[in-house]
Length: 90
Image 1 (spheres, rainbow, N blue to C red):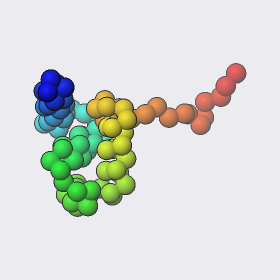
Image 2: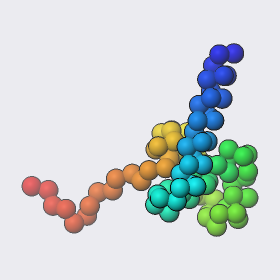
Image 3: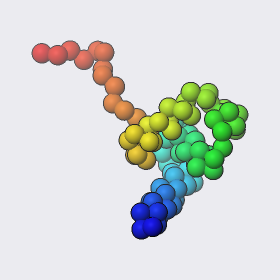
């Protein structure tokens, strides 16, 4: 029973963070879009429904949902670093 309470509090905290990301408008557009996707997923919307609402493909929604499950909220919102193809190694 205690785990259920902590899980509900954690989910509510994450939801508040997502709403803050969306409402401030001071983040990258892609971060705001990912936050919108996670909010809609939290509302139990289908991938097809979300893709029509937010004008993204369903694969993007599945990818963000998977990153959230594997890496948590920050992992789902932040960009992963990419290797610079122009950088030379010594």
